Length: 286
Image (cartoon, rainbow, N blue to C red; front, side):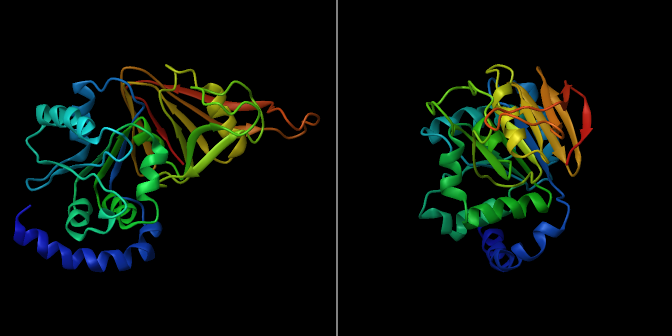
């Protein structure tokens, strides 16, 4: 972006902040989500991300590394993969509590064609972003045709209700999955809400997170709960999801509990829809 273009955008950017909340939730997003379940990112998967972004000549990529404790390292590795796939400029925007109001950095984020969120701790990311202009800029970009991508923690933040990984009942020591199927055991925090009727879990098959996602479904039975395995991406455009990568995506939905009585502590249901998808498959998403 030239200096003249950057400052021209600032005027538009200022108006956009005011108008964003009024219309963004009423329109179907023009952009896409590219949600990776963590693990090794093959170059083929990165190439698919670049293809999904559908760049025009002056477009560029922004990396938001706030989930990780080593933002420079996270940027270094994804930058190498992007450079192997495209000649587009890659910009590292490591926001903190002060720079979330930096107008020049925000203007770059608003007009990025691809925004990528590396892994780390999803809670750390949202602690920086929630209720800020960075949050607004991500939504604005998505509404207006940008691709929002993320892996691991960067996948978890896509949901409106974000799984933190903490259990609320019994032994609350962090574990890769839940050790009990107990009611009211899932802690949620507010995520980016780019998916407002879907809950995402990551590293899904590798870390056997079935108990965790079933617990999330019990807590939010009207949501689709989707587990994405490592080295695999869920690509969302409007109401269509497709799969790319080496492993699988598992969806739990339509839990039925009518007529069941008894123990109020343990999860139980008599029916649930479970679907398993692999590379190339498509399905309708809520």
